[in-house]
Image (tube, rainbow, N blue to C red):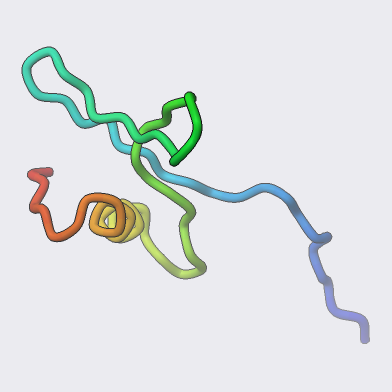
Length: 68
């Protein structure tokens, strides 16, 4: 019996955070680049979106506590 194997996909699930205070928004910029993006990143297998976002924010900003 053959088992179904989905085709290799180049689609990835990501989460992003829109973080603002007063009239300011936090954006990220890669080193030596001019473009900006919202903080976040790729969802790992079996990881919830909330867990992913907390992990990514911790990686990008260190041990900072964001309110939900």
